[in-house]
Length: 278
Picture 1: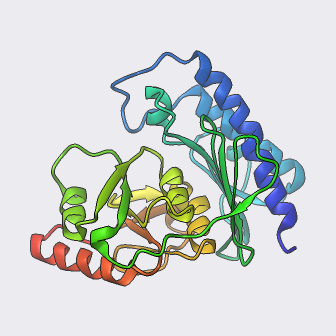
Picture 2: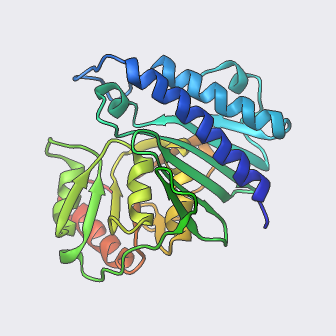
Picture 3: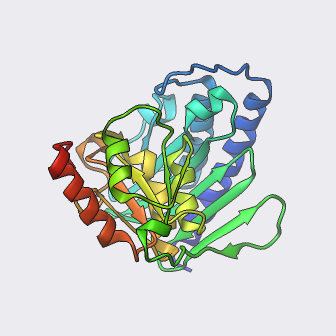
């Protein structure tokens, strides 16, 4: 299978990092009011474990990751073969000790995502995909992976939407109201939200952040697409990686595919009506 070695590298990397993160988590004192941009030693150690493992196998590949750690600093950050890593996606969930965080590793070849792995250490849920080979889940101590498929919901009124925690009025609330889904669920980690869509646990993931990074979404995007869904920006544009200093703008919509165009139209209409931008 094409990219089999890259897949095994990603899976071993998230496994090793997940074990270390859980060790930190077991003794970590919860921070109930943790800031959204909090970073911990667990983030940095997790990243070093992942990057060192990748470099051991692919010493010439480029690395893109969230934390300023020695292995990242010594590597090229852009290139034809690029690994994109979020050592703890949803660090706020880690800090609050609610389990809402993941470890994410993706491999991009010539601008195209080829491999993605998202591990949720606390629940021991692993979701992974290889381009053209489908999306798979391996949970708890199950020995065999199971194929993932998106939901078949065709009506927004019956859809399940997953989003970031938000108790404040603003852009996210306005767009969710415009979509008017049947149910809304929330979690801190983008990796978890994208996995939820891929696993058929949600129909839509709405990201309304005006600025975020490649590592926040890359590994999760291929999960959704290989499970039969669609991922674009909020204007329907493709997501590009390895450009703009790993910066992403204008939000993201991941869907089961059947709802994608309808959801984009609702978002665009709401943005124009309320002048909230898209």
